[in-house]
Image 1 (cartoon, one colour):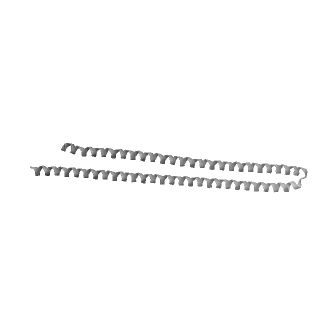
Image 2 (image 1 turned 120 degrees about the horizontal axis):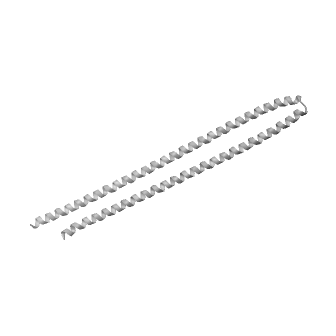
Image 3 (image 1 turned 135 degrees about the horizontal axis):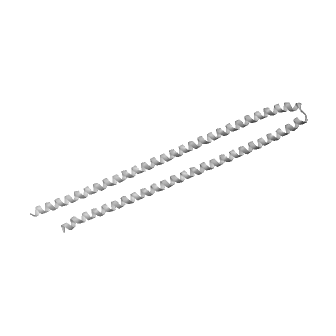
Length: 194
């Protein structure tokens, strides 16, 4: 009888040990799963960062293209202005030839045309100044947009970090609850033996 009781007791202890080992294995599996989840989240974050960087590059390329287009347009405008000036100069030469045949009236006409040319040059200068100011304003706007994008990215990163911290806290709470359950289960067999 004594041997039977002892063997039963030993069997019970073995069963408890096996249960404990099973629980430990399950805990290990849970931890592994948590690690894998964290790794996946990190990979996702890296992918999102890469996507953001690609978007930034695309934006920069677009801005460069816009700048190049603006430069081309400015060059075209300058060429047109030069052509206009050349045409005006040709007209002036023709006028001068005709003016040579005339006397006082021709001189007055020349003075008037010179005044018109000066006015045109002044207007051209004003136009160029306006174009330069516009370019400066556009550059400032582009810089502001880039700064806003960078701020948005920083805010996104902060939010993602907060989410990760919350998830880690939840995981820690789960682990604590599991540990408490294990302690309770360990205490129950002892109480039963008593």
